[in-house]
Figure 1 (spheres, rainbow, N blue to C red):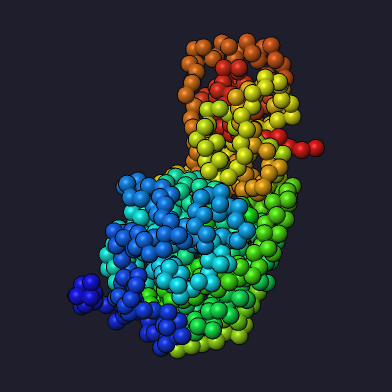
Figure 2: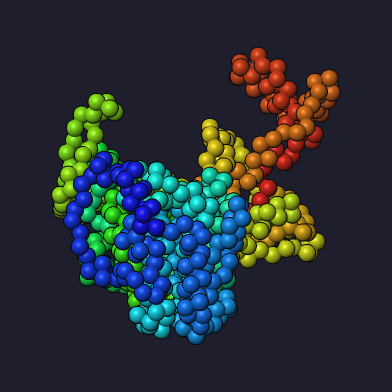
Amino acid sequence: MIATIIMLSATISMDTYLPPLMAWEGKSLQLMQKNGPLTTDFELSDGMASPDYTQTMAFVERLVAANPTQFKAIDIGKSKAGRAIKMLVACEQGKFSESDIANSVKPTLLIQAGIHAGEIDGKDAGFMLLRDIATGKRLDILSKVNILFVPILNVDGHERRGEFNRINQRGPIEMGFRTNANNLNLNRDYTKLDTPEVRAILAVINSYRPDLYVDVHVTDGADYQYDVTYGYNPQFASESPAIAKVLDEHFKPHIDKTLTKNDHVAGPLVFVKNKRDFKQGLAGWVATPRFSNGWGDLASIPTILVENHSLKPYKQRVLGTYVFLDGAVSALAKDHTLLEAAVEREYASKPDKIVVQRSYAKQPDHIQFKGISYKNFESAISGQMEAKYLGEPKFYDNLPIYWQKEVAKTVSVPKAFYIPPAYPDIVEKLRLHGVLVEKITSSEEKVGLQQARVSKHKFASSPFEGRFRVSADFAFDALTARSLTNWYYVSTDQNKSELITHLLHPQAPDSFFQWGEFNTIFQRTEYVENYALEPYARSMLKNNPAMALEFDKKIREDSDFANNAKARLTWLYKKTPFYDQAYLKYPVLFEFGE
């Protein structure tokens, strides 16, 4: 292992090209061990390397063998390439079943690493933490919480290892790839559920019911002093504001204090508006439900997204993650009852309208921010002004931050949705989301339903995450009474009301509709021959004077229409009972309350 590291280090070092580092000698260095039971591959490499899949799975088995009364490894799924996705269950009394954990008096922390397999800090940090539990150094942890630990979610991307996967990330020497074997980004899949990896993690959440979900990433972008940044949707933009309030007032202060005590710098999860001009300010992101933390916000699952800073050395990032997780454990143990009460308040909340799309505020707020000094220079390479970071701290006392505060689109929440029996895959995905779906067996006719009809639509010009996305404008039509036997009924009077609406309302940007699940409604498969339509239309106009007047008016007032035979005949064809009545009709029906 050591010889391999030396050889690889000799082949390439991006340190020559990356911004200079600020010196760091943190107290958390004391967490590392050089030898002894269950020393991790990360520690054996002095914080330079991360083990491959085979080595990782071997360490999982070693942990279980060292302490089988407190650890159990289970397969939660399998990747498209056939690799098992492992999860470690850690609890004090050895009661490892789903019901044991879900009904435990102690809170449960779900730690997810490697959703982007190049950003693998959480795996090595989690192994160190669990090792300290297994060897008796941290007997306190399992007396306070249960832990579910997924060391690698993106197991196939993890094995697309190499030195050249992230040009702006300092280590490990070899790292995995961002996407899975099908080139899908798992952290864009939390609504459409195309990947077995995200399906697996939602199944874990549904069955084990964790109290806190932590998803560990590594960020990119600008340079700054913070080595551990993290966040969740802010209260003003959250669909679970009671949860965000508890995280703000009780969890964040405790986690920040733990990080600071160990010489790590905790920062907010924000992004830079202009990477070449830091002074223009920050962008305050609000996650939509395609992302883990956006999905958690809508599902009322307390979720924290950790983004370690890519320019900090791998050793520093991993140790910072260990300290973060330690802080999260103690915060959860101390204040889980407050968090549980907030979740119950959110489950009970059933809004009439929800925001499905936001835009950035035109006027900024201002925050204090620990940046890094930089200078601008005219680049002969890019032909524009570029930024060069200088490795010296720079404090911004009043830096602008533009949050996504503007409401761009809201929708009314229906009382219920009705799904045709021809869409069992949609029903399956809803159940994976933890949504209650009931099959209708009664033949009684239903009244008061509405259907969305596409009035204008636009397909994306290129695929995104394997899908051709579509957006549309809609009109809503009242329907006559009809029987819905064998259809599926989805009430919004259940715990995940807001998530249900985001998934099934076609105007929501992360809905099944906009991800392309219903693209067949844009196909016309029956057409008309003019020799049949022309005499039928003549008779139709003769027997319907109002239609004839409307047709004559359109000819008089619209010269393009008047001079376009196809447009004239199409207009008439749409008026016949032979026209495809399902064309451009969203098949999921709506029931609105009084």
